[in-house]
Length: 256
Ligand SMILES: Nc1ncnc2c1ncn2[C@@H]1O[C@H](COP(=O)(O)OP(=O)(O)OP(=O)(O)O)[C@@H](O)[C@H]1O
Image (tube, rainbow, N blue to C red; front, side):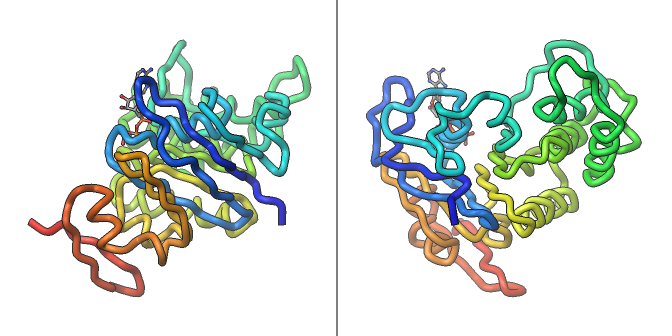
């Protein structure tokens, strides 16, 4: 099976910082990867590098077997989508206009959205329970509502590879679980998901693979079973943790 994403000897470029251990991993269709590490370690930088939004210091990223640089922008936008952590509104837009941006890679040149694009945007809004907000200006939404609109935009884009930066940011527990279930559903349908996250318990519940980025530049990649261990995570966060098994999932609790 061709990996959706393959990373070979990749060193991300963080200004004024030594390179660290090269990254080597692959995301296959059906897999959900969590990227874990402390604040400032480089999770967002990695995600942006994987999306081709910033150059790597060394190494290679392949998307569906082709080097990232060999992809044309539009074809790549049909293939992968990024859920950004920081979003800046450059002009006032409604929720519907925002979600329709997700359809742009699929529009024929110089054409407006077609009825099927509008239908897909509506479905995405409904899936994220924000359909009733469609006519509202984005600037009037709460943080959690905005986050769900951003996820609906990616859903409307229909990528095979989701690169998501803290997808549960701003969300209450119900919507956190809803979004993780959506990502798992996407993976079950043959997509790949790679997401930066801080919640170990969500990672343990929903990720099948995990990448650990350590502040000293060390990296570890493997199955969630191998990576989500109290000793590895206590070292990762410089915070002692204990683990227990609840309802078939590992849960982590910080030691006071
Ligand atoms: N343009 C820049 N110039 C200098 N340093 C930068 C720049 N952009 C990011 N950095 C630094 O690179 C490092 C990695 O940042 P990054 O946002 O990738 O971390 P992160 O792991 O996603 O953190 P968090 O968990 O806080 O979101 C940080 O120390 C950050 O301050």
